[in-house]
Structure formats: C-alpha cells, structure tokens
Length: 187
Image (tube, rainbow, N blue to C red; front, side, top):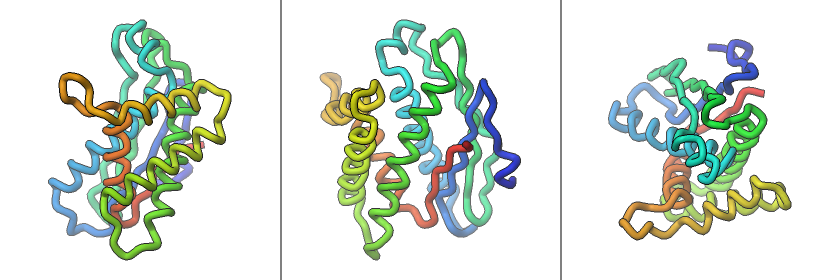
C-alpha cells in the first residue's frame, strides 16, 4: 500500500505502523507488537476525550479496524480509527490525540536509536521524557492536562491492574526498541 492510498476522511483516521525489519519475525512477536500498538491507540483515544467523557457515553472509546497486516519486510499494519457519534468522539480531538501519541513515539524512538542496546527500562525513561515534551508544547490545553493525568496513573490501581499511563509507557517502550519501528498518522 502506498502513502497516497492511506487517506483520512471526516469519519476515520488512518495510521500505519511498522515494527520489524525482516520476514523471520515469529508470529508470537508480531501478535505481541500488535497488542502494544493497540495500547498506544487506546491511549490516543484517552487523550482525545479522557475517562469522564468515555463513561458519560457508555464506556466505549471508538473502533479500531485493521485494514492491512503485512508480515513481510517490514512487518506492518494499517489501522483505521473510526469515530462514533454515540461515544462523543470528534475527528479533530481524536486526530490531536493520535498525533500526540505519534510525537511521543517518534521522539522516544529517535532517543533510543543511538545506543546499540537499549533496555525496556531505559526506553521507558525516553517515553516519559517525550510525554513531558509533548505536554509542554500543548501547555494550557486539555491535551496537556490528560498527558499529565496519565503520567500520574503509572502506579497500579487498588485492584492491582496497571494504570493507563503505565500501560502506555511500557507498550511504547517495547515498540520503540523494535528495529525499523515507525508510527505514522495520515495527514
């Protein structure tokens, strides 16, 4: 699929993710990477409208549709994020959230590219630094507030489940340490 085939319209946003550089990647790693991509997209929906609006509209976040999964060279997935009026999602808000996630992932990936071996713990620090940069650039907006809120939710919840910030940071760290990783939002 070429870049000109990946387009946005008023009801959906296209995202293309590449996360491996050769055909020798085991299917289990591909599935694990897809789970991390889903966590990143879920975080983008959170940045778009936060938990208050989410619960106000029945607990949904929108739909993520897989348009293409290519287990070739590189392994890639094309997603379509579909807004649903019943959930209170609006294209500009979701596009802002997805673009913020893209900025965090690109910044963290460029920070982890230099060292030969980067551990997940080091990559998590780069993801947190990237979140701080994006929040600073968005200062004074709901987006900045939601990023800060997610940073505060890095401790486990009372029931033992990890907070939304912790889930995103861990998933993003795993993604940015993969060879040839990229997360691209169609403009």
